[in-house]
Image (cartoon, rainbow over all chains, first blue to last red; front, side, top):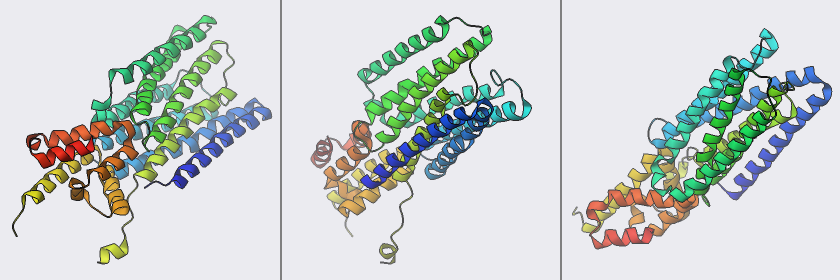
Length: 265
Length: 94
């Protein structure tokens, strides 16, 4: 059983990881724009890489049977897409020196959303009868409300972007708002349960991504965007929160150690 | 060895519990059996006599979603739901 100590340690390391990520971002911003772009690009690799490795470990742990196996396969695909997208962004910006928005990474960012949605659906499948209309209403209303505010915020300021760029940026906001719904449902569905830690972290992560995508589009609008800018810490925090959520699940449902003395009897 | 009525019901209940847990995933089944063994020194079939153990473990793990897992167990036992010991088991889980 996951002990209280495990849970406390998870939270302690989580806070340390979030603080470290923010510190690296702020320090690089103090060093100048070039350093920020370099650090901003490279910092995503270990963060998304950790999420990807932990997700692949979950896939190995769950194997091929059961609804949660499908869920973790979908989540693993989401993590792989995110890792590829961040790596491509780095290659395009630092080595190929081409425009990063819109570009190939966007394909992987967009493809990752259906996988994330598939994760939520497959995870909820065995417990779907516990999902009530009341449980769905509040997250849907919350999602619509933040989407309306987000779109008003980004479009209200006027835009120098092409229609395609605006549509692409807005599609991120829409996808974010959609995935917030099951994340919030998960928090209320597993309330008081030990798996709720993961769902709470995922939910905070989804909200942060929505804010970050809104800020990204806003910064693109006024031409102030650069990789590694302070608001980008929210993207990193999302990956860190998710990685710790997956880790908490992995430590809870890890392979039980065989008791050698018990087996000898 | 003669199989008693209690043993048959115990096997039915164990089957229903295992099916519900394995539908979620093998690690879930392994986790529940490990907690049963570590905390209560018993196995899945023993939940027939001690349904409160299973209830506590599933509530601890899945919180409010426990009701849905219970529904899945109840569905598997539907054909035997008229029998008093099965009814007693299901009622103890609710």
